[in-house]
Image 1 (cartoon, one colour):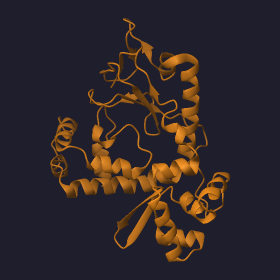
Image 2 (cartoon, helix red, strand yellow; image 1 turned 90 degrees about the vertical axis):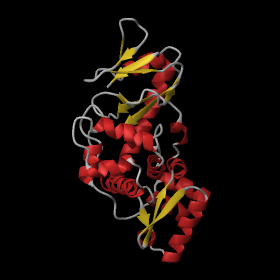
Image 3 (tube, rainbow, N blue to C red; image 1 turned 135 degrees about the vertical axis):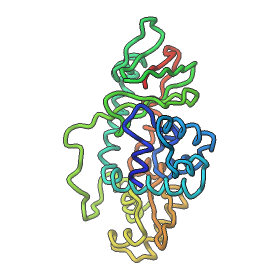
Image 4 (cartoon, rainbow, N blue to C red; image 1 turned 30 degrees about the vertical axis):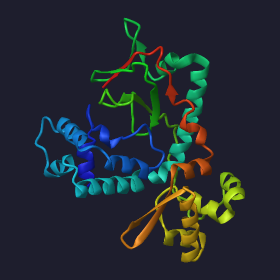
Length: 293
């Protein structure tokens, strides 16, 4: 499936918007659910654009028809890629996103939206009624009094980009400026309570706080039990309580049950609920368009 993912998201001026649904999802499962809900008309339209100059593979025909097997295979590939290529680095990435959000929120308050967007490389057009970002392909987005959502992204490089569909809610995806040495040397083998975990523990209990901390990545009940030295029944019970509170999502994969933190669980664990809005959505009264690829 790696080859299919590379064909769906090539290093090119276009890849389908249905791969990035919504305006930023804090948890994988929400994003995958939204992908599975993509209308068939959108799948057909965007895959036709993607393969407009080359033969359409058989699997793409199945995906364009919205066949359940094709969509399930795609979300499975995305989940596997996320577990291998993203999940091990989530603490560092989220720390960078929080720092970026705080810095941009301060810049917005101090200098206003136009100055903020100029920090991303934008320049004012000759007419003065739009902002232009350097990019190889021209693409105009009319805000028309709609708010512009700005999202930092590890996978965006060099310059901000937007969704290809101009009728979608306007989103500007900005490169995440990672400091040197951001990549961790490796995952710790021993679970050690952090200051954030100790704070959460006073609210939900020490063991459940540790369980919540481990569930940054999909984890089986057995893995929880082993890492925390709990019985399987105890680990399962803690996961169930957290799931009933909306802090954890669970699903069956064969004989195993996997658990992962939800966006609410992330906010409780990391204390980052304010990041959902701070520094992300900007009024468009002084901005009429954004130009990019």
